[in-house]
Image (cartoon, rainbow, N blue to C red; front, side, top):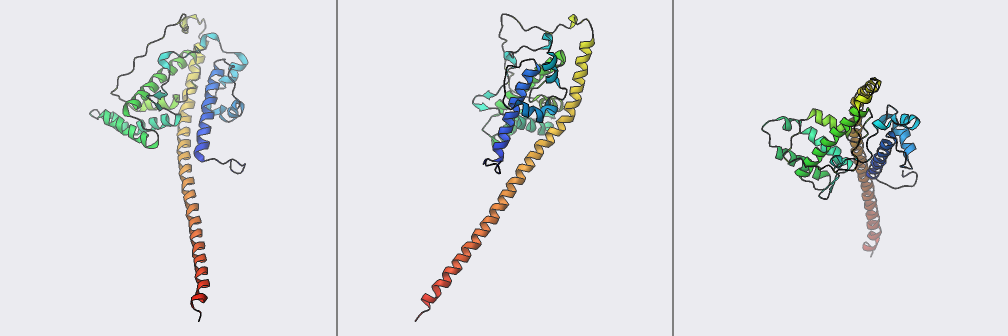
Length: 288
């Protein structure tokens, strides 16, 4: 970027890339469901880079070329009980903070598995670690966010089983992995969500209306393939995140080394100048 005349930090590039990827996934999800009204300037370029990873089954192309049957298109308005918690009493849950939360929950696997463990202390420790790398957050906010992720996971799993459409929720794979690995316990009450009634309830998929089992078999086959692909990509994504952290640490050490080298050169130059000034002053003081 600097060679092209743009000065920016590595953290700026990382933040920009994550924002682009989040927008791309949101638009892709709409297109998979048949909604092409949303325009995104960089969608084609990002799809060229991320298409094989995010949509390995080519469901976007199938939807664009053939159209998605009305019976499998979810309602465009997400029900109130499934709205993801992003702002909790002033604390903004960014994508990075959510991934860190899931990482710290995984690290507390043994603590959650211990029957007599102090769950409040476990969540306090998780909140403290998050606060050290970002804005201050308390244990109750961490627990509410986990409960929200858990609820969103159930909703997306139900949609995937009913429709056979690959969930494109950004935290689907990671949240499912943590939920299947860690027996996460909380001591805050799960917030009650009141369903907002509408004039027309969203149409539920009618399994009995399918005269042929081909659609059901197709859905199960797709879901099996999705689970297999996700199990392969989970390790890859984890390694990529670890490699990014190692690279950031390496760049920081390299910058520190270059700074030290520059300081040594400056110090040597100052010593040379000081010596030259002393040599010029000696004839003056040594005269008759």
